[in-house]
Amino acid sequence: MSPDERAHKLTEFRILIKAVVADGKIHPSERRMVREFMAAEGVTVPELVEQLGANGWSKAEWEHGRKEGYHDAADAELAMKMKEMPALLRAANIKT
Image (cartoon, rainbow, N blue to C red; front, side, top):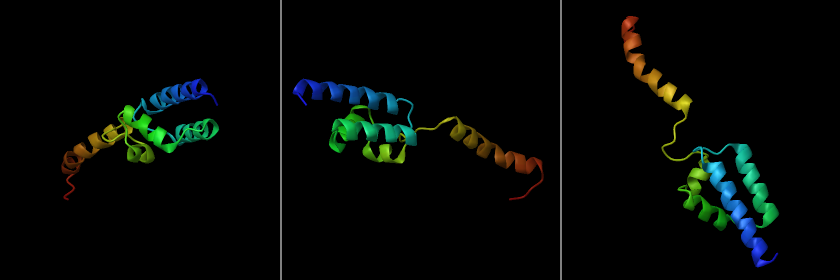
């Protein structure tokens, strides 16, 4: 692969990583797609880590599948229900 072809593949990889991490979470199918791209195009793990860092992600966050501090709608709904729980228990005369 020529240096120009390699540079083009790394540009494609940068775009792919930026798109995959944009929503704050990594779905298993997205991780698989990235691994397949890496294997097919010879992208290394250090290059992955570099691109994650450029997008504000750590390798641990990548492996966990979620950006530190990220909360989706389900997390927010659960937190709201947990805050409401003591009042609901009191209203039902349930002692905790």
